[in-house]
Amino acid sequence: MTSPIIYLTRHAQAFLGALGRLLRRPLGSLLTLLAIAVALALPASLWLLVKNAQLATGDTGDAIEISVYFRPGAALEKAEQLAASARVRTEAGTVTVISADVALEEFRRYSGFGAALDSLQGNPLPHVITVKPKPDYANPRGVESLQKYLRAWPEVDSVQVDGEWVRRLSAILDLMRNVLGAFAGLLALGVLVVIGNAIRLEIGAHRAEIEVTKLVGGSNAFVRRPFLYEGFFLGLLGGLLATGITVILVVALAEPVSRVSALYGGRYLLSGLDLLEAAALIGLSALLGVIGAWLGAALLIAKIEPRE
Image (cartoon, rainbow, N blue to C red; front, side, top):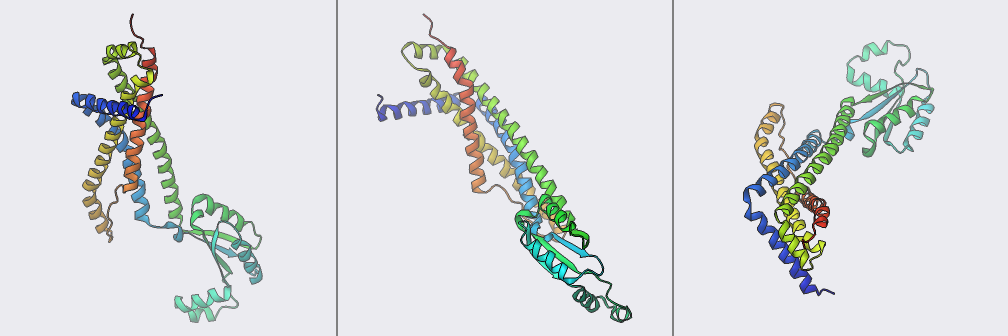
């Protein structure tokens, strides 16, 4: 059984050996790192686009309101009954009943047509219910579910959604998230291929050394270890470089975005990757490096046998 000191010593040797190999071929290592960094910076930049779009529009949930208009002559009790039923719905947040008398009084107060309204016989305005969805359901699916439920009541004349642009924006952002997921998956696969190919080339360059190591009793795991560390370094440094590229992009675009925001009377500061997002990007890149190195090394090393 290998002692912990010997085990750690072997890992330290593999760690330093992998770093040394990368430093001995700076141009090749740099080109590989640039390919990894660009592949990771693209989905990171798309993520920042979605993130800043959400921050620029703010909390859109409060902007969505469903107005339910009752048929002329419908009893106020029916409106209150529907409001009570709507309040127990999972999607519904704030539900408010506006009676026809209250609506007429508000219209009389703010419209400036008080004298004309006095000449009318009866109240032409219907009872109205306003429903604000809960934040978790302020999306196209949640709003559509509420609309179907409210329209089903026979006393309801029409259902109108105020803030249609919010629903459209939410749908666009959902689409962008789905595109981001597919894009990130394809580019992660590209990173695996780049690192795996780099490791295979490195194994080919050290084939004789591997044969000698196996001849003196080195196992496949022992031979594979420094290449896994090399993949880790490629992923880690590629992730750091990708983070640096996104920082440069944010700095370069911050002033133009601020200038455009000022033209519309706002003051918006472009948001970059926070510490958690940067750490996730670097950590994922390092993990992809190890996986890519393992995929590139495992089968190839197993096939190399020492010559008699």
